[in-house]
Length: 256
Image 1 (cartoon, rainbow, N blue to C red):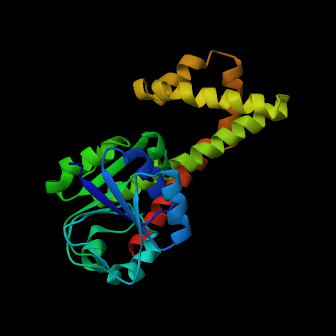
Image 2: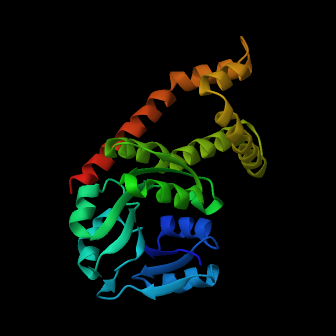
Image 3: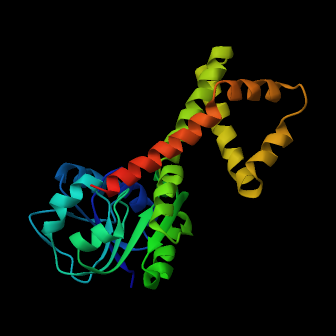
């Protein structure tokens, strides 16, 4: 018999995770927006969907909490009983806060990313060691997992892997714009960027970034010219500052 996972929330992250986990677990989803729940059910028929009314008995359930961090205050009084386990994907929301707001036997903070819908998420985890093996098992179904020892580390990881797809999308868009600016048709530029990112994945999995750079950059060549322009325009420092800002925002959310 398949284990049942109960999603609370059905936004973009929940939807991405559900797509990765469907068929592997029995999934039930609770949400406030009934029209979006119905749309999700039409897209993924194997789900059991329920409107989140004034109260929900979570006794003995394995909960995956996928709501916006600022929704926790209003949501928590509606959750009655003691869950078996609580997996929270709320950015910047500390274990201590979760323990105060929602009763459960064990708690895990998880930070997947939207690549979960393709089983390619890079998910970081931390929390109760007793639940470590089960957490890794669940989230390994949607991609790779990395167990971290501290909540500070997962807040940093949120900035890198959680926000990272948006940062990479910006780079991809800029590369395509550069191709169009130089004279390529938009469709051709987009196709080149898609192929570039697809081919880059196995490279970065097997080599350091500096090694990849050095393997492409020949003395006085086109890559060296382009790389010099990138450095001149502060792209590297901009990305470092982006991670810092995202991490600081996660820390700010944890204090609310």
